Each structure stands twice: as C-alpha cells, then as structure tokens.
Length: 402
Image 1 (cartoon, rainbow, N blue to C red):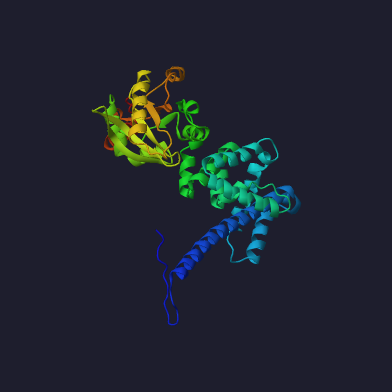
Image 2 (image 1 turned 30 degrees about the horizontal axis):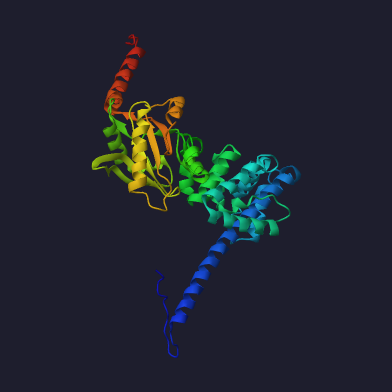
C-alpha cells in the first residue's frame, strides 16, 4: 500500500489528489535514478580499476620504470585526488592481480565461462539479466580503449572482487562466487563465509533425478543447491545415536544447519504433520527454498541408503504437492540424507519414480564417548608436572621411568 506523501502545507496552496499522485511519481522515479546512478558509479570505478591493472601489465611498468613504480603511482594519484579513497599501494597491486587473474580466460576459450555466467543468471533471474544486458550495452557503446571488461563484474563491489581473487584458484571457482554474489546479494562477510565453507566444491553433488522430472531451469538450480555430503561437525551425539537424536541435535543447532544447507533455505517445521485418508503422518524436516520457490521435504537416516527409503519420501513429496503447495509454487523436491550410499544403487532406485528427489550423505558427527575418553585440562597439567619431575630426576643421574 502506497504511503501518503508528507506534504508541507503553506498558505495559498491547495492540496488535491492529482498533486499527491504526482509527488509519489516523483519520489519513485528519483529512487530509481539513485539506484541507476549507484550502479553506474560502481561500474565506472571498476572499469577504471580494470584499465589500471591492464596498463600495469601491458606496459610492463615495473620493467620500464622500476620496481617502485606502483608506490610512486599511488603517491601521484593521492596527491591529485586527496579526497578520494582507493589509491593505496596495496589497492593498486590488487588491480593488477585482478586483471591477471582473468587475463588468460579473456584471451582463450575459457572466456566462454564468463558468457555462460550471463546465461545462468538469465535462467535464475530475468530481472538481473535485463539489467546486465543494459549495462553491458552501455559498456560496449562507451567502452574505454577496447578493454575486454566482462560487464557482469560491474554488479560486484570492488572489495568482493578482492576477496574472490585472494581465495579462489581457478576462473571457474571465481565465476561461481560472482554468480552467487549477484543472485543472492551477498555482503562481503557472507561471501567470505561461503568461500571458507568451500561451497564451490560442495554444491551440486547430490545424486538426483532432477533433470528427468523438473523443467531445465528448476533442475539446474535444484542440483546447484544440493550437496553430495553435508558436514554435521557442529553437533555432538552418543556413539549409537538414532534418527530422533540426530533430528533433535539438528533442530537445536538450526542456524548452523541452515548455513550448511546453503543460502535460500527457510525452515517450515519439524515433524510436520500431514493427514492423508484419515491417517496422520509426520515429515522429519520441511523447508521452503526462496530462490527455487518450492517446498523441500527432508528425511534423515542414520544408516546407509536402502531403496525402500525412496518410496516413503516419494509419498511425502506427493502429499506436500497436494496439501501444501500453492498454485504459483514449483514442484516439491525430496531430499534424503543418509549415513552412506552407493551411487549406482541410488540411480537404479529412481526408476519408476515420478517425483524429483536427491540423495546425499552426512559426515563428521562428533561422538560424546570419544570426548569423554580424552583427558581433561587438569589431568593433562598433572601429567606434564609428573613428566617434568621425571626429567629433573634424570638430570641428577636417576633413570627416566617409562
């Protein structure tokens, strides 16, 4: 609902509906112009950074003017633009490093990866793609000295770019985090967390039948948001834990669990009750994925995969589709997380199923029994003192006890 505009009423002014509508239009168009200006300023600064990095490489600046040229350039730029930030020596080195990181990709067949990023963004977010196309056209029309600057870079802040090139080893990995930053609006701290969590290598590994039972767009995104293995190292359980205990532990560490699942997962409920034909049944964990716009039914198993597990999960997925799914929601997805699995066995078990399901494993659950067997800090300190005593005795000719 549009808020009433704040109008300063003075004498000789008659406020009517047409004026109110006009003020609202002015506010809306001004906000849009602010957004466009912000994007444009960011893109221009990034283009300039790219140009400087390229020039340092192509001009062979250090060979030509000496190893201190970057420091000198930093001083000259800061002297000319004292109120501007971003001209420190370290920042200029990052500009060169940034260009070099992508230089080979831009001059080889790997450039296709950057083109593919635009295509993927189109599949995931048409609005983003339209903006990118518009900005890309502007860069093509007004480009600086023929610089081969990927227009997608303009939608990622400079400090994000630094984090990416500092921590990524391949162009493919960097493109993954660029895509994630654009699609999910990641802050720099969230981006850093994603990189430390190594999401690039973890995502998209679940064994699934998504391509067979989902449209291309949903299938690609569903595969991307799943993992082959989930790290449950943030929970501690007895050595012989059951499914209820595993579920309890994950529920108590819900924030950590959601981080491990990945961005976009929203928790709906635990032991979610559904009633079919008068019988009550309960789903272990139910989520809704914001980007996929679909429910995700998650079932946990503390044993290795068994084919019959899919029959139950298939039933739950169909039940959610019929009882909870809204008309504008995408098809519900099933996610089975087991202690272990055989990929061939899983693939064969998909035959005959008509619902989209992914199967993954979990690992690294901390075991309480092992912790209890470890000596306490006090016990360790006591043992150290005993060892020091024995060593001191040895200095005076007494044999060291072993």
